[in-house]
Length: 238
Image (cartoon, rainbow, N blue to C red; front, top):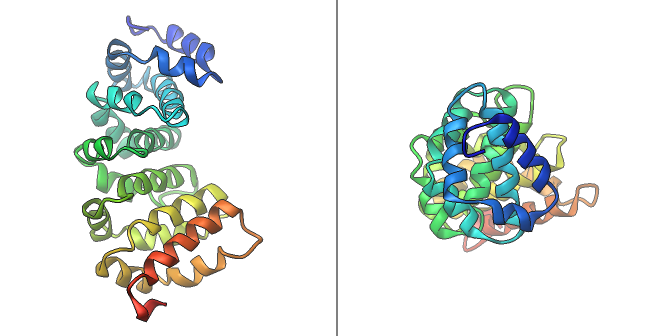
């Protein structure tokens, strides 16, 4: 893998798949740097990205923020943002998912990811773009993780027009898309600007719809959180 061999990357992926502890153990500065170089090449980007997603998923599952830190410090940000902007649908979906993993439940990593050049417009641009919901639902996941407890990031996304796009994603038949969109909206509702945008996008009736027992519990939980934040200290929205 350290020599950039695609077959070796595929072999490593198969070896660590299903074993989160092993995934965490194989992450190293040298491995990440090589995967970053492979991300930049069309012929090797897909295989490198699959392995990065597997490793960062394991980092989230094991609550090991050092996996993401190693990826960030290894320079993974620039090629990931580039793939979101110009990659195929599958590459966009995986790249957005990796970005979401990188800032999952870590304020320090969240701040680092927010500094990736072009990440905010790149994520907003693929929301609702095209017929395939995959990239949009993973972009919503990344936006969710970037905005948890971070008013500044939330404000940037709101100014870029994220609210109506997330509202539209709430209508997707995919429960993953619904959950991620509602989760993202929950964390961009705290400012007055965001609340106005949510009302203008007619998001409240859709969020209320998602509270019905016909929807997945995870979806309803995030929708309830968004409505609770919207009504907090704002009687006009109660």
